[in-house]
Image 1 (cartoon, rainbow, N blue to C red):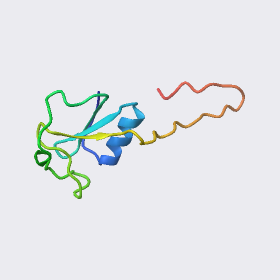
Image 2: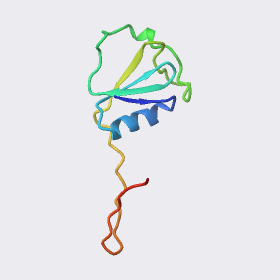
Image 3: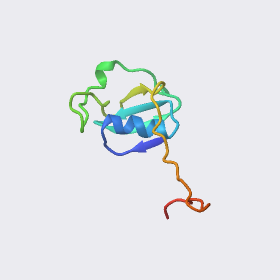
Length: 95
């Protein structure tokens, strides 16, 4: 399960998709959660997800102990940059 700090919904959705998750949930003004299933504690009325997003006040981002769930099917993952070798070396990452 992905858990990110407060952020913009778009950032949450993209991070969840890039990590390979099917669903993203916004809780308590923008806390980002993600996973491949949801609904463990049952459905609640949509009116209970009434907190405006901290970084996008035009949207709601769940509430206290309430996740607003989004299906990420159809969202394209951000392509990973491809390292182009100069003399046959292999990139091992940043340490």
